[in-house]
Length: 393
Image (tube, rainbow, N blue to C red):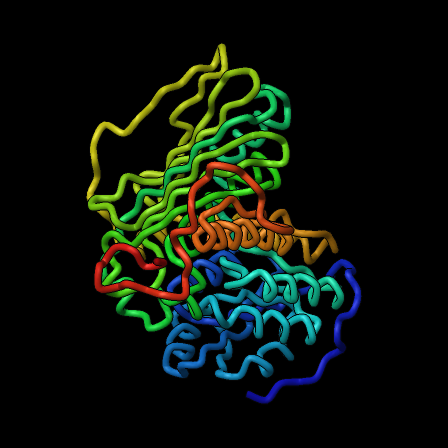
């Protein structure tokens, strides 16, 4: 694709005029980005890119994108901003390319599969004066915003306790149908990295920085097909003194949804429930005096497929894309920054470090000393997939 040259952006200044956007990666989630940009005034998706030319061409036709390419450099020379919707291990190279080209970036989660890569991405975008946003669209649920507001206005009091449950179903085909899934070098982790990272983001949005975390994990259902965990449980201690329990699994049939509950110093508890997966969450528990609510699903529902999950989340992709667009236009940081995405990744890395050491680990700095917290049980260098259970032994 022949592309005109343009002036490289080097400063964080407001963007005026039409915003030209590119989409890199034309897989399932890219449709949410294309539709979200199409809903924004003065924003046009002008080109899409995929390493598979047939998929890029089909995506361009379906979403009314004028041009498609298999060359990321060619795309970056034509746009002001880009969404990166590619497999996890490709994020770093693409974001660094975008930074060098002076292009703003909205990157799907996880930002990268290891902390050093994510740090390089954040630093490169900062040095280039471009905006970097990480996709955590669940922050835009009204139910999630209501909890944040209850913390900010003092209704809940300082958060002291939280509970996260990510109880999902994945068929074996989810892992076997995509070569890079379920492998340490390409996926970066299992359920914690790929699914539960959204709730780790919410947890830290509500409770702040993590001081240390201790975790254990296994592959109870998918161990014959993956190197990583399908089930993880962790205890987290926050810099504020708050604590949390964190449980995640893709081994359930049927799935039981996802929930985060936060208890404040006032003694009141508020929570949100996403059930089934992908549906807009509701505040199922709200025990603040004068506005009490206890609402639970009446039935256990059948599992939903991944396209349905993505489609249900599309309105909240749209809200996050709209914020990203306004951030570029106004010359400000987006609501969910690359630094936010890096913070979640650091805590995930500490979880995986704890699997190796059997001890509490800090997101930054040396392992935390905590007597009586167990022996080292889960180093990742030897796998026993034949058991279908201990993938990190």
